[in-house]
Amino acid sequence: MSSTPEISIAAKRLRKSYGDKVVLDGIDLTVRAGTIFSLLGPNGAGKTTTVQILSTLIRPDGGTARVEGHDLGRAPDAVRTAIGVTGQFAAVDRLLTGEENLLLMADLHHLDRARGRRRTAELLERFDLVEAAKRLPATYSGGMRRRLDLAMTLVGSPQLIFLDEPTTGLDPRSRQTMWEIIRELADSGVTIFLTTQYLEEADQLANRIAVLHNGKLAAEGGPDELKRLIPGGHVRLRFADEHALLAAMRLLGHSVRGEDGLSLRVPSDCRVRSLRMLLDELDDAGVEAEEFSVNTPDLNDVFFALTDSKREVLSA
Image 1 (cartoon, one colour):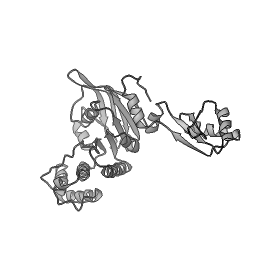
Image 2 (cartoon, rainbow, N blue to C red):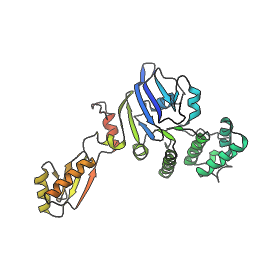
Image 3 (spheres, rainbow, N blue to C red):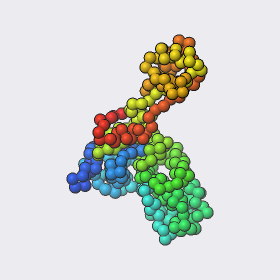
Image 4 (cartoon, rainbow, N blue to C red):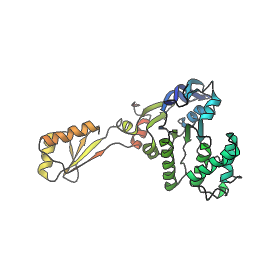
């Protein structure tokens, strides 16, 4: 079996209940290697439970999964060797310095003394923790503790990292720093499985996003795919004069005049082909728009639409 499979996670019909509470109701997940996959959902939707199952911390009640080519049920030790897990709260030892925390992880991964020190030095440099290396984590900022926690996860050079709400509680600057680190990891070939409560985070980082609701996947796709599920996409055209605007209104028919008097709002799925057809139609009629902008629903709109129990569930 290849040590670098094209599919990092392949899960089928995963189920998990706690008493009468069904947390996961037979979900399927496929995560391609070297990508960033984000799992979204309301609090209590089962995001952390999914991470705990796929990282071997708890057993599912049903279903199967292969993680980095290893069967989750039959080869949990092989799965643990291939992955790293960073939770919502930094799991550093507050009685050890930053450097000592990393050296401890090197020992746990059975690196010899020289390799452990080299790996520690590399990670301190990579995560901008060299100056803080000899200090206790209690003196670190929240962002520094989170960087140390992620550095500890990387000591064993995992192929897949589970990041369970990694930027919760961080200030905007620290969150941006974590985003840069996550992108760099993915660019280096590491697969990232990300859960987050920040929709902008998923939009900025993820290649694919799945929305978990009531134990099932309500939708899955790329960020732009998901945005196209929700009605409300439109193109705004602005014209130089009233004559051009009225000509466009007669041509397009289904447009709505903007409040500024010289713009039109035209419903659109905002796909490239649709935009090209719209502009070609204007051009063929000799009607010129001074400027146009594309407006699609954002992930907040998608999230609330998919997790509103009063609405029909959409599928990508």
